[in-house]
Length: 293
Image (cartoon, rainbow, N blue to C red; front, side, top):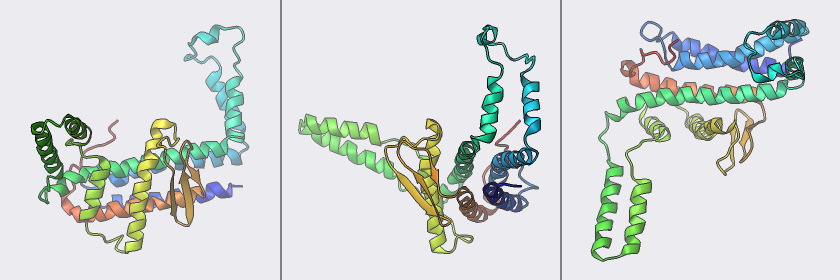
């Protein structure tokens, strides 16, 4: 019998996969790699894992032990020093994987889905930032960073002429720490979303929900640097699809419902689809391969 929770997660993943395949049809003759194909690739990883987990569970997992033994007996890659120790325990791999399959399935699903969410957002971030230059070129730059630098330099000269060393030191640190030409991915995405016309997300409430999700996922994505633990010093929380996800400081994400949060990734598809239609034939470099093997 299929686990009810896993069945729910599979339905959410297959729903997301279906949308990716639908939109990919619009690009199949001109593009080998797009936002939709890349996101579909990421969906496949948890989808295949959970499917295989259910298949092996239905069969009692008997063949898993046999396969593990085939991989450990006379393994030519066992060339580490410990293998020569008389007390080396060849059964530890069997015990550990049995534990993973039986007692650690919830933990495995947690890690799998958390990494999937990070990777799904990375796909969105990559492709929206890819469109940034094309959209930015249509608008005259406000040169806000340059104007800020000019203002600070003017204040520095005034302090220098007044022989105000304390103010000079403060302004110098401000210039060093806050003035640069770098545009972050968050700034690029905010700019793109402020310029495009919305069709899928014409409803303002749904559009705000999508933008809130993007904001949350920026913080969520940063956990990849800390084994999926939030080390920002701040707590974050989002309520989406009638479910809550918490990202508390010094904690890994806490999901009220995995499937509902997976389903919320549809909002990223909505955002990108509106961008896709806004750009029309001007999608930059969409023919390039992002995953070349």
